[in-house]
Length: 286
Length: 320
Image 1 (cartoon, chains in turn brown, yellow):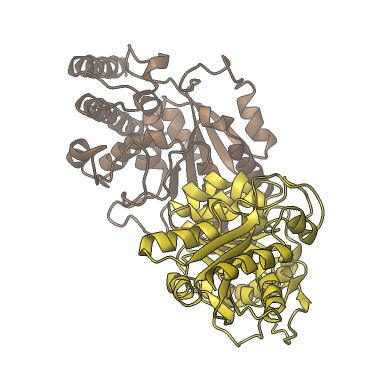
Image 2 (cartoon, each protein chain N blue to C red):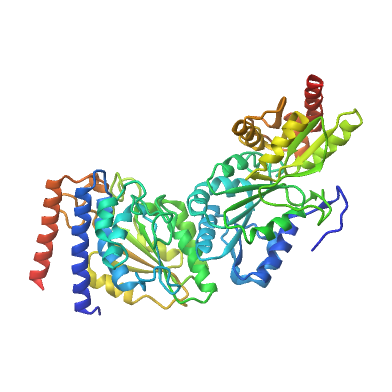
């Protein structure tokens, strides 16, 4: 069972991260992919602050766990999770996001961003790259894991399943997929156009171990990450995290228009107030 | 293994690739061989270095992504496969994962031009246009089977993506005595000098060009032949020198006329403001070809030896 103190620390970080995200969204002139950012906020906090072995003082530390954000449009979410871990400066992100020569743009760009393992943005491509990294680590007998964060929508792409098949066939136990299963695509809900039925079974059929969790429950996130098998295990693992797009902001949750959007100052304040109220509610329960 | 030289004899470029990768695999522990159900040529690599060999089945997009992941970890992956599927099915993965991140992935494709025998699904007539359009990608088209060995060795210290086009890869003409020439990414080679006209070609068509040069010699036309095996980067100096010295340029290739070497050569003229008197290109017109040997199809679509001879006579007549 997860240590309650650790869970509380992570929940506080997720609370801080939501506020920082919304603040950036309110200050940036253009649209931010805020819906899918808020759905994976808790997961990224779990990964960057608990589950992964990373070192902000030595970003290229050979023993580090590798992280690929296959849903590259959630880049800002990763920047802020990493910033809270000490990799980047929040003011720097806030000041330069999306601007000329900034390291921080809409999609992860390795050319500009130190600490990024892999550029992303074109959906469905991250898992194959993660498979390549996992092959390399196994061949070199390295002990780190390769984590790949996917959106459920991008798993409509065929390449995801080509890579899933390879990882299962070659028994890459050092590979961990995480699906931010927020049941929404950009323009529809899961099931409206494409079916996402028997979702976890699909991964099992390709030879993966599956851990189903509530992706907003930090206890479950920590338990899932703590229970990952050793890298020598004979199956890759996927954490299917059931989440809510726009989680924490009443007017964004499960609203199709909030895949990406610009936030007025007034809406930003309302959104942050929502997040704060939810935090107070949760804390008063415990 | 070095081959004894016998001009015009046949050698399988694929087996040269297989032998060379096996050698490289023993010398460098970061060399990987990746295939999409196309591993016939690299059996010895698979047998001796099974932990650095991956067959993903028929899944080229995945193959390109995995290669990128390996390269990000300091490995040098060699992908082998059929050209249309590596360059078109996996086109975006090559662009996003390999070129955008400027990774030292080596793609070796077989079945260049209309040599595959498989019809239009398997013909490779757009590959050079597609691959050379990608930033950071380097494009080679190799005819002489021994040249591939030198190029693969050289690629070990070349820090960028590389695409190597081979013809059928089963029966390739030996053109050059091993060790006689130096081959370098970014350079072209002049196996035959001449003063009236230059034929620039690559891959299989270099042999055809040498044959045409011989035929025209009998008619008093002195043909220079340039093997432009490095299409990107291209040897601009060699192109400009030929334009100045021979005045007539024919680019002849087993690729769509649009977007191939001919377009690259025209770019060089435009960028430098130096032009030949006559400039002509022969290659695949805007068609989807059917079946038959490369030779038969070149005749059918108007870019065989006879077509080259006619084109050159026409050019020389006008400039003499």
